[in-house]
Length: 253
Image (cartoon, rainbow, N blue to C red; front, side):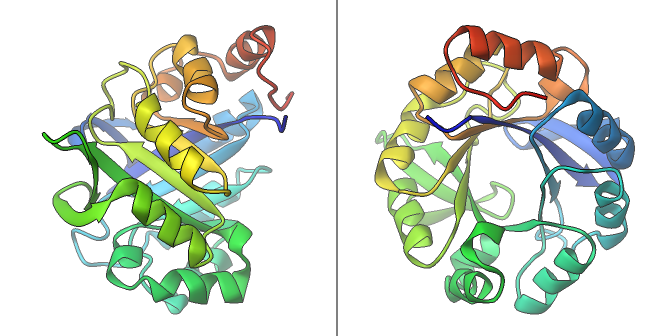
């Protein structure tokens, strides 16, 4: 079995890392470059940097922040938020990103997935899917930072993203985001079973057990968290030791 990855996420607004609940009520969590430096030293496997209001504010990605964070890292960096063209993706790669994450732009122009994959390789293209359960029990896709419901099923959209060239799916449960009640393993398992590319579980991490559940019941290839790492509640090394004792392979620091 391939080693599972632990990924820290930095949601950035106005140059500062923020964190909320269900995509709302954002509060300050620190300087992105300082947090990146800390995570790099603690042994996190990868870092995701997201400009959480770029799409809503109809502006480009925060390139100065990308450069500052990339300068602190010796691990893969994924950047998302406001990337809606080959030109904006190039600017992010030039600023130091190893991968780009696209969400609303992929929904609006699915051909962008293929164009990016052809130019940079599928391994550099992450399609982010924000999903929430509807009253009927199905998981729907939401865009524009979780504010707009799309007429798409989350599992079906993941399949299409893969067929168009995506190398990974970053799957966030809006229902669980920031709640620390555990990942949505049903949603994660459904998407993981539907695609042959890695799936990153996101939204709801609160305890070490939640990560173990994401990798077992959720069948995730990687698990992403923000607040449980930002506020120093769980050391990355301790989490890796915990998972190793549970028989879940992890990358050793």
